[in-house]
Image 1 (spheres, rainbow, N blue to C red):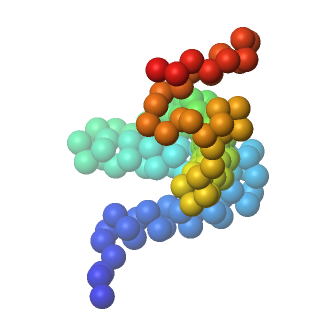
Image 2: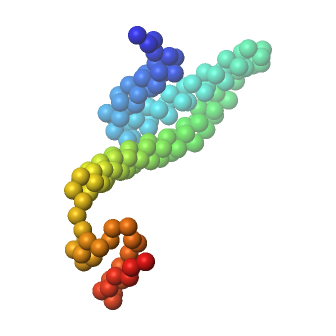
Image 3: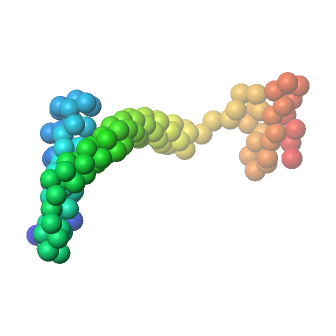
Length: 138
């Protein structure tokens, strides 16, 4: 049995998080993701300043949190909307692809002559001029 890789586990965890956040609706899921990004960035900023031996100023942390929230919130909201639209488009395209595959398979399984051409199209290229209602054999 194959062991799941770190990437597979991370993907599964992020998918589970996305499923939970999606249940909150667009506004609350955006707020939750923005809060997560803000907390992560402010924490990282604090740790880097601490590791460098530099002072950590409370006002700088508050400014950083506000800036990240103002910038990340609309981006996250828009990205979640675009992802939802892409998922819908992909589902539609999958349905169209399945219908096309079935029609193509039916055409291969049951070939029949075109009613206007009269079956004389074997091995030739035909150009149908609908305006003139004629078929030019080439």
